[in-house]
Length: 96
Picture 1 (cartoon, one colour):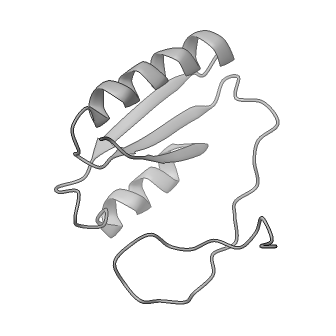
Picture 2: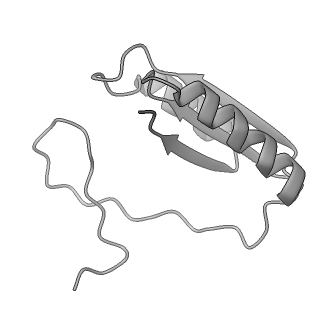
């Protein structure tokens, strides 16, 4: 059985590097949530709906959605770095 802290990076590289999961906040109230749109069909619609629900149901202060250049490319390092400074919680999301 895999440990919950095991994480497989879904990018196309063959790295076997394990990444420790970040601490989860106990509450989302007042937090800034960041999401990365992978550019696949309907990803933007799904993320916008999720953002609305997070604001309404969990009192999230703000939702920031960044869109990757193309679904087959990883998010640019600058996008990840900027997001890490701006948000309290990040969600990488997939469209259909």
